[in-house]
Image (cartoon, rainbow, N blue to C red):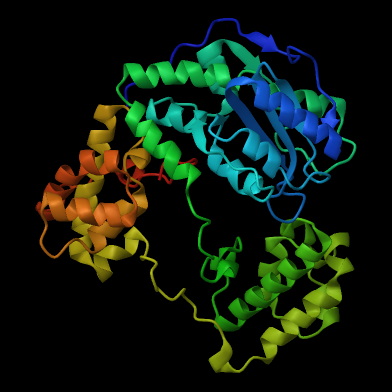
Length: 428
């Protein structure tokens, strides 16, 4: 892909303090009323961010919400004390919200009844513009010439009181977000990608919650090392027991019991609590505290009848097999997929954007696995629309995909580049 990212200045200006200083955290109803009035009286877009406690607490709840708007300054809100921000949401109705990687923050903001009616996603804009580095820090550096510290991004934001240095970091995250938006919007206009961006932003804003995963316990790291159904039953029982314990304690599941401990138990199949306690991963203080819970889960798995054991493979259902299995299970589909990938990749390079943002790899796989009965540009366009592709994507890819679906086999590209990576952010 042609590198169209602006050159960052040789010397970046450190962004060390918010322009008006670090505001006090709003944690009372009266304080929230004051923030609502200020934000309503401001002008232009509002920068929004949220801090979670990923890896520390159960779930992805917000533990701090940051806002900044011209004429209103910056506000920091404690959502643990103020779990209903619907009045603030109403005050900002019709105002464009500016977020970075909005798909990460919108779910936890929705829990607070705080949702946008218009959206600009700076990370997604960077992707559509072909930027190589789309993290907030690198983008602020490249577009605006500021060095934005990110040392507290993985902190435990459930801590109270929050250290002053963390609050400074949080306030700086929205300090120049609107300025970043303006720089990116100008480039979207210059490159003719405004309409693409608007459709992508709206898709992120209106995206429904993802459906529950089928057999989420199978995503336990290291499960591929468990070769038998009885061992998989132990993984399943321990995973569910861990989820219940983690939710009750409001602690990240991995801190309650590491995946490595689950896999070790599944491989060893300990017959009693004493044998389980002898496994190294269960000697840690965290695992040992709830040893009876884990022992009961293992016992349940060992007591299952053969017909109650999980299948060694996930039932296919609506999930496609991995592409590496297509040559045996759907060889024609494997040829179609290789052709589709090559053509989508070539078009994405021409348009200077990641191919996963031109068309998500999932959609590429689905239309290759089961194309329309009669392949035409129109039927392909309809199929892509049904899958959820945006209008701008369909307009660009329907014709080349229609050709690729009926083309003969082509030489395979090198493995390292033949499979597109899943997008790290929105735009799928």
